[in-house]
Every structure is written in C-alpha cells, then in structure tokens.
Length: 226
Ligand code: SAH
Image (cartoon, rainbow, N blue to C red):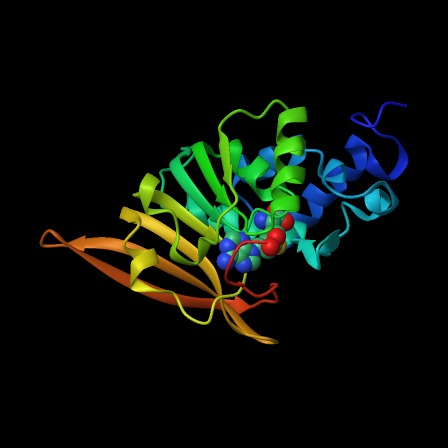
C-alpha cells in the first residue's frame, strides 16, 4: 500500500486513537484535534519508527534531535490559539526549532502563515521535503539560529519555542503583537517548565504576564548554525 495512506499502525484509525488519547489528556480545541487528525505524523519519521509514530512519545529524527510527543505539540498549539476567539485561527506564527517539520505542518492548519527556524541544515532539508510532499504552502523555513527570534517578520500572534531556553529574553517578547502569546520550555537539563507569556496592553504600553504551566523535557536550545 502507498505510504501516504499507510496500513496497520500508520492508518487513519491509529491516528484517531491518538486523537482520543489527546482528548483524555485534556486537549479540547477542535481546530487542534482536527489538524492533528489530518497530518500524517508517521511520514515525519524514518520508516523503522513509523509503527510508533502515534504513540505518546518523542522519537529520534537524526542529528541527536527529536520529534516532540503528540501531547506536547497539541498542548503548545492549543495554548497558542487561546488568544483568539473560539474557532478562530491565528495570523502569523513563529516556531523556533522546526526539526522535521511536524509541528510546523500542524500550525499551517491553525494559522495564516508560519515562519519556522531551525539551526541544523540537514533538518531544514528534511522539513522542507516533508512539507512540500504534503503541498503545504504557508510555512517558510529558515536555516538560522532562532535564539533571537525572527524580527524581520515580527510581530507575531504566537511564538512557539520547541527547544529549552535558559530564560525568555525581552527581545523575544518584543516580537509579540498585543494579545499575542509565547510558549517556551524554560530551564536546563531535567529542570524545565513550560512557560506561557501573554502580551497585554495597558494605557498604550505593552505588559507581559508570565505563567509557569508544567514540567516538561525538551532538547536544549543551542547557538549557531550547523
Ligand atoms: N518542532 C519540532 C521539534 C523539534 S526538536 C517537532 O515538530 O517535533 C527542537 C529543534 O530545535 C531541534 O531540531 C533543534 O535542532 C532545534 N534548535 C535548537 N536550538 C535552536 C536554535 N537556537 N535555533 C533554531 N533551532 C534550534
């Protein structure tokens, strides 16, 4: 059978079981659940790992990096969307840490345009190939160090960071629109927390509120391009 339709562990039914599990884990935004039921996650991992693509676990994608678990992708997408009205999509989104492009593909269904940064050239090639074969046209991937965000396209409705940073810099927050949201794992090694930053406007001035959500485990944000 053709890879895109899949069989057994990679079928639509397996994907729907993943969606059921996400619901049980508390994910409720129908746009997120719908996007994740449409994007074939198994096509983002190597053939030998495809039977595990819908398990709730990160998986290796080469270059010592991972594809984030379905729950983490769903949670961070849902948090990004909470700034919009019910059923409404995002305008412009920035992702830092594209990896193989899975979350960028999910975000492509949730936003008008997505900019995704990845420091490892090999992964940029892999992600671009994956998105092209799915005919996803609203994602732009750049092979750059995303530590400082991507001011050229700012401001963003949401910024989703997929690698753990020691702190959230003022320079990154400044790339949010008023009402925009930034979601990032903060911390080193095993001590990481998912943090949500909201940009609010008080008397014409931007104010940022930060909330610590839950313990998480991401690969570290590294500097430089390779
Ligand atoms: N979004 C991916 C997760 C990939 S893991 C998914 O859908 O599963 C995080 C990625 O962040 C890795 O590919 C890693 O190379 C990348 N990364 C780490 N530091 C970075 C930096 N400073 N700039 C851009 N990408 C970075």
